[in-house]
Image 1 (cartoon, rainbow, N blue to C red):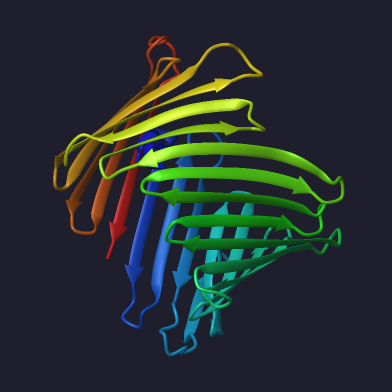
Image 2: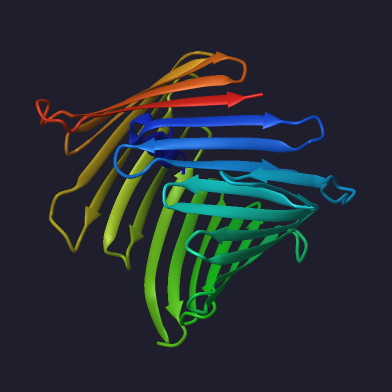
Length: 314
């Protein structure tokens, strides 16, 4: 729901620094370079090149990927290279209208393949088949994911074919702004339901509210979102774990658009952790984000975090 975006998105203190560079070549090939410097753990980065087939089904021309030691060119493939210290992944994808094939090879020596069919089997249905293979241990995994979307109904199903098999299914039904949803997990081998959740909500143009019961109806949450006007937004969420303490967790957030090119956000929770964020579009194709997190109950301790984000698109 919209409250999740308000509470979680565009808070830049989570990482010390992030950079996102997007560009597109005259022949339609798009490139995306990302890098993240984490407060804890190694710095991660990824390089991606993508070419989408036009409706005529024309195959891809070529791609070129570069590593530290060599380069290689391959026809009719779309790819992405994800690099981080001690780990790297090479993704190769061939796309046609409604069809996407993605192959992944990591330095953990895991070979993964994903086949996606969108609106091919039925209108509103997207199917994904995923496999994982580890040559060193001869381990093999297979999963099937289904997404079905209609104007007043959304459903998803995730099947782990070789483990269990295990199935996780969720669905949401809406009418006149009212929403009812549910989730369930089932282990075929054990013939048992592994988890279940329920949710009810209401959404309108300017506000929405929801009550959820997750983790087999043991964790309860209530949330609301309000678009006060074209500049201001507000939202909050309260959470109670019936198997934990009697304390209720609370988060409150707000967003204010300063002008057409910038906005500011703020949030605070019941533990006294406050976060501030500022986003500005410096010029067309250049966006800068600044973030700060403060432990208001321990201002003298080194528990505060600062983060930055830079986005370039051309």
